[in-house]
Length: 547
Image (tube, rainbow, N blue to C red; front, side):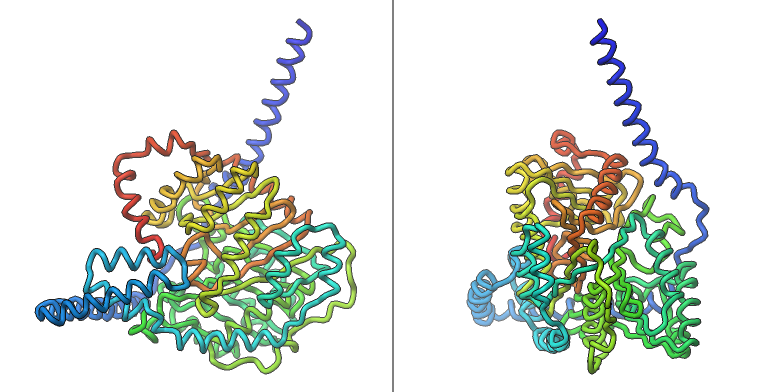
């Protein structure tokens, strides 16, 4: 009787602890949800007009393609000659060294509309932008000359007991140096990250480098802008890089002119109308980088817009994350930024090392990190995708992932399944409230094989999770890359591999707390999803590589 009472008492205590834990977890999202919203979302007519003109020109291109296909089909001999040529084109496409999802997307298009699809592939899919990519890679390669391997850091890494020297060596062979003696701060939400960024910007003395995919007018922008204008008056060198497509709807030329007039250098990556005939507008810089004096750097999933700091509500609570690095690893993000700056402006900085801070003191408690980046100029080499595969295969106990989009290629899906079937605790967190309905259908369709293999999938109930996180057994990757074809093969991305037990434990606890707020999707539930979803999702997934 006593043992039964004790058992009940323990159960009640456990339940109480669980309830307290859940209440603590829920407080953060509830606090964010109830906070007074002072931000706003503003779209500019100039951006809408530009987009409309570009869309019209694209429609004209596609119309000309269909007219050309119609004209060719009218001539029987020409038609069959083109079909004969298409056989060689398809053989070349199948044997091309590229991602299988990319091949499947084009093969389906060619199968549905043979002549038009073939012409589209020859115009836009058959490496017509190779010259641009080669030129861009020259700027990336230029930066490699300012990166030297640190054998002492590698020896210290091995001596520390870390067991992933193969991943370190692979990344170093791709020019991503290993840096030791770094301190890290993790931010579980965008507003926390930007609060720290603003404080560090105010203390800048030499230079500031900023790069974002999306820059949007709003209360966050006003705060950052005011700091930058004040720093420019003080003689601080400022370079600000932004993506044209990501920012064109939510900024105006006057906004950038104000910065330029203050002596701040700005650069617009890949203006969407510049290479319209090659569809090079499809390639964007999705990187998020802030570097201050070469001493401090930030990267993560957040952009410079009010929704990322929950100043305005879009898709419920917006959960993003990021990391602050202080130490030699800052130079990795400095070189990544300068490579993109040279690519965008077509003017390389003469010597990257003038922006490198000399950290004289070494902390015995400092952690290791490697800053990684890649993009279409690297293709068919994909260091980020390949390093993710190595991270997955090296997992022994657990692997936790957050991603807003889950559009897996076969290699990564197979790696995740093998890890789960090998006894690794694999958990993936995706949004409960999506920002793009079509991508959401693709994401949910990709649950099937994962759930069948024992992988746990959670949807973040309070809203939209935009964080891009991969942690496993003492190693973490935080950056700008999503688990989809666009991020891994079409965008320029960056991230930080971090070997620091305290940092990884902090991230792990945040993800476990996020899971407490999320809904676990079971395979039985997935099979019972609405009929419309079951019909539309497979068709959407056919074009996941083109989304």
